[in-house]
Structures are given as structure tokens and as C-alpha cells.
Length: 508
Image (cartoon, rainbow, N blue to C red):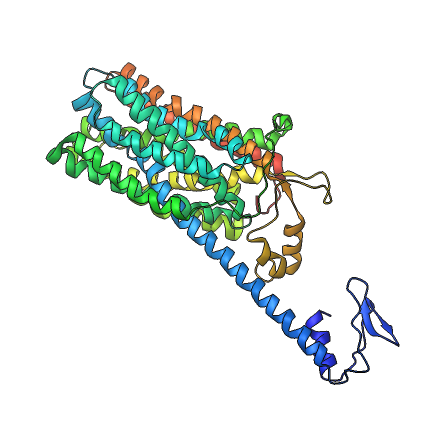
């Protein structure tokens, strides 16, 4: 029986019979084993003292409720503004196909496709690789340094690209500079989002990553409309302005979860003996080794093989990114509602590989548009679920419930879950709230997987470009490489699922 019910019983003059966990005291009223005794004084028969105590208790409970609502508002604002950052990071990466085609035909005509692809690959490599740096800095409480500093570097590097004329200048500005800025913002943002959610992490990261699909539509449209009118330089300055305007509110609102403590970074050597973790790591390596080939080269393929105009070829990339948007929502929704992130990621991976193989037979404009549309949707399932999948295998349990930890996480918005659990299931909520894990080690393991993904993205597209050069106009080798790589990644993810839970049905 809770305190409020007992007080109401006293005020009504009713002395309830207590259950086995409450003992009766003839001189003092009653108390239980976990709370201080409540005494009915003889000089206060009307219960005025208890009325005062009850009003104070209800007022404090209402204040706690308002604090929980405020925490939820902070979560919502953080997620919405993190979507703005994703529009700049992933959006620019998924738009690189426009730059690849333009550099091949105009600015860098003397360089091979594989050489030009290194610019975009270096950019996305640093996006993931910088997570290992961000992880250590966030352990020291430097989220704001990483997020704001990365935003400044991202805007400055995008602006600097507008003055580039030679290949090495593009490598430094668009490859290294923009990549470092993206990495600082991405690493800090994704780790903050993950600290706010556990059970609903799939849909949370899906909503946050939806900005990548939006940016993948906006930036190609800007380039396609403006380059022919105002030139490449001023077009990139417009892109830099868009990046600046979207990063300002993100920096004003996004913040690290309150109540976090600093900790000394430490290496987690046990990660190299965790079989499910290693299989997920290498599975995502092979998956990302081939997934961005389509985004980088679909415009070039449309122009060279199908002889589409630059406008139609760019619209093909925009269509791919438009179909990418619903893929950021539906797979995470399925993941959180019934299957789990890994179970949902596996079919998305095999569907992506199948579509890359179907690209081999796409010899008409209609067939290529169909493949691009479905490929964008399937690839979005991977892009929206890999964070939640990794987070599900990096959580290192604490040695014991009583062991103090500088940073532990138990559930979404801890205050709410301790009261209600999930969907009214108090028992499940209690289990979640008590299942703490070492967030410092989880961050480090997450960053290690991101580094592996970064190396995959660094070499995948250039390797596809080399196969195009060797094929002398044939796209078969590069398409087979991309499809096979993603398929191998899917097989390793199946192995990770078996190593973690066997073949038993259930959310994984």
C-alpha cells in the first residue's frame, strides 16, 4: 500500500487491515519494513498534520512529474535537431554522386573515376573514423566541444570547396576538412541520442537519420539547378549557407543527457573475444564496403550507359534518396514493434544485395529507375538500423548491481520507466531499470565498429572505380563486387544472430 492511500485512510478515520509486509503497532498506528512509521497523534484527531503532509507530498509528486515531462521535451528537441545534422552529414555523402559526375566531366576531366571517388570515400571514412576520437572526448565531458567545433569545421570546409580548382585542393577541403567536421558532429550526435533510448532505439535513430534522406534530395537539387546558372563556386557557397542555417538551431538545442559524470577512457580488450560483437563488426564492414557504390555512381551510369541528360541523371539520384526517406521509418518501426534491430537488418541487407545484382540487367531508363527506387528504400533499412544493431551487442553488463559506475544507463527516460515500465508492463520496466551496463565501454565498442565501417567506406567506392577502369566501359565487375560484398555482410550478420541467440524466435 503506497503512502497516499494510507494517508487518505487516516483522514477518513478508517484503519485498514494491513498485508503481510505491514506490521501493526498498538500505540503508534502502523508502519511497514521499508518506510518510517506513521503515527496517529492523540492531540490531532482531525488529522490536520496529515493533511499538511499529504499536500506537500502531492505537490512534490506533481513537481517530479513536471520534471519528467521536461526531460521528454528535451529528448524530442534533441532528436529533431539531430535530424538537421544528419541532413548535412549523410545528405552530403549521399549527394556525392552529383559531384562525382560533375568532376569527371568538367573540373577533373584528366583524373580517373576511381581517383575522383577517393574524395567522397575519404569524406565518409573520416565521418566514421572520428567516432573513436569523439568517444574519448565525451568520456571527459566534452560533447559541446565536439559538436560545435565540428559544425564550424563543416561549414568552413564546405565554403572552402567553392574555391577549389585542383585535385589536391578538393581532397583537403571536401575530403579531409568536410569529413572531419562531419565526423565530430556525427559521433557526438549519435552517441547522445543512444543515451536517451534503449527499447525504442530503432525508431529513435530512424527518425534522427531521416535528415540524411532529406539532405540527399535537397543538395542534388541545389547543385542541378544552380551550377549551370551561377557556377560551381557560388553553388557551393549556397550549400555552405544551407549547412550553416541548419546547424545553428542544432547547436542551440542539442545537449548531452543531464546527470552524466566524467570518466577516464579505458581500452576494452574483452571485445576481441565477444563473438556476436565481432561478427556484427565484420558483417557491417562488408555491407558498407558495397552499399555506397550505387549512391556514388548511379548518376555516371545513367549518363554514360543510358545516355540520359545531366538533369535526368540527377533526378535519378534524387529519386533514390526520396525512396530512402520511408525506408528510414518503416524498418525501425518493425524492429521496435516485433523483430528487433538485428532481425530486421538481415533481410534489408539481402534485399539490398539482390537489387545490386538486378542492376546488372537494368538496361533501360525505366528499369534503372525501378532499381534505384527500391535500392534507396532497402539501403535505408541498413542506414537506419546499424546504430541500434551495434548498440544491442556493445552493452557490457556491470559486474554486480551494487558496483558503482560513473555512467550507467537502464532505460528510456529513466524517471518515466521506473514508474510505468513499457506499455504498462511494470515488471518489464523494473527489469530494464535494473539492468545497468557500462556506457563507457559501450561507447568505445561502438566507436571501434564505426572505425571498421569507415575503412570499408574509404576503400569500397574507389575499388569499384578501379573495376570500372579495368572493365573498359563494362559495369559488370563493379556491380558484382558491390552485390557480393553486401551479400557476404548479410551472411555474417546471420552468424551474429545465431551466436547471440541461436535459432530460437525472439527479438534480437
